[in-house]
Amino acid sequence: MSTSTTAMRVSTNVYSTGAFWERLWRLSGINFIVFFIAAYVTYGYQPQIGAPVDTLVAFYSGDRIRILIAAVLSGMAVLNLMWFAAALRTTLADVGQDGWGSAATASSAVFGALFLLLITVGAALAYSIASSGNTAVTSGLNDFAWASVVLSSFPRAMLIMAGTFGFWRAGLISKALFAAGIATVVLVLLGGTTWLSGGFWSPDGVYSRFVSPLIGLVWVVVASGVLLGRSPDARAAW
Image (cartoon, rainbow, N blue to C red):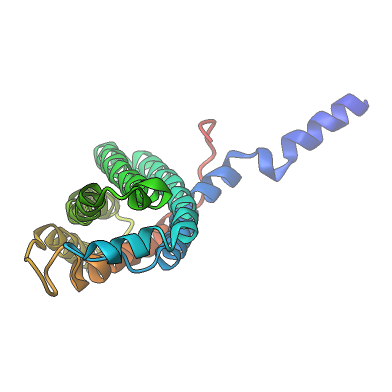
């Protein structure tokens, strides 16, 4: 009798249901934003392309602990981004939009890899490279990080496009939200053209550093709202 009762309690426990886990992963987009912003603020203002060696050493060596803490927070952001993409892909598959769901998986994987690469470069510079006295490597990796930010615009735009078109094709968003999503794709794609040598449209300029990422974060909020607005489906996969 006690064994049967225990089994019944386990089976009716909310944490053992697929609906609980599916809703949890649908919240990953919001978690991604929280960790991303926390990491962004903690990391501080990275020196611009071609910054003097003294500035680079002061940033990466002087703020070593802060940068390494930001690396941990960024890793958590990447983790939640992957779960967000998994929830997005599963939702789109449920409504018959497997193709767009697969595109979301592929683009999030590429973006996550680039994001991890950026984290690795910053952490390595702060951990030992900047203080080793190898100024050429330090300067080169700092510039490489900014170039990677620009190139990350393409997988970011693909992720937004996959989610936007998938939601629209499934009838989960209005025409107005679809139009806003298309505008978001274009604006994020423009971040991949920020190759001027200085100013607003440079790799370390305002658009690449602030505007484009902010637009992407707003889309994640909207997409998370769409995901959370659907009733969790009962499935063994979760």
